[in-house]
Length: 172
Image (cartoon, rainbow, N blue to C red; front, side, top):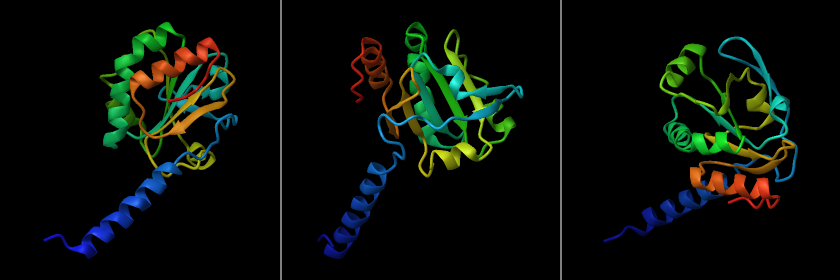
């Protein structure tokens, strides 16, 4: 027999997590993405502003998160199409050491994809109010937020880019 108290508790927890996920996006659609300049693994400063003029997939991620790994696999799967459409991908690694990131990226070959992996110094985590990962933002060519949320399929990213390039930026 089903315990009613257990079902009520489960329902309350499920509603709470659904509410949390729906509020995970800290930036409103159309808002400018907060600017940042961070160092890549070679110590070179990379700024978000340098990617203006093209759509950007901005991933706020870690090396140890299974969902982040799934998101990276999705981006790898569509990397060639993103490169063909002149889309940039930026991985901002939160709470990871350079060694962890190097190890994580050793099997990642972005090929012709305009790609940057940068190490957060805490400012992005604060500016973007990150409390759930992965966090995937789709930014238009003016670096305005078109989508801010959790996991997204590679196919949905491609659909958004196609719409963004055609001038109709409805986001999945």
